Image (tube, rainbow, N blue to C red; front, side, top):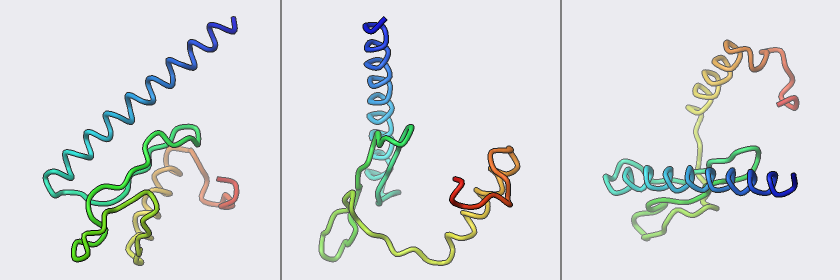
Length: 103
């Protein structure tokens, strides 16, 4: 039984690694085509599968994006967050009256 659990854990890890590798290749294609620069985080069950910076954070100083790059976000992000929350509410995954700390 223990071997089966260990084997399924290894298989899940391999699948997660495959996902991370595929996602990295996909994002790299955007970077090559100058369509993306930034940081990507893909996580499953709270564990990061891919956490990587792509392209330049500052082209003038040739500073690359890294996992720790800080981005200045403006008020426009509120609209995207509102849409995402409403979509989750529509799917029954949360209620608009739920306290934030619940999620």
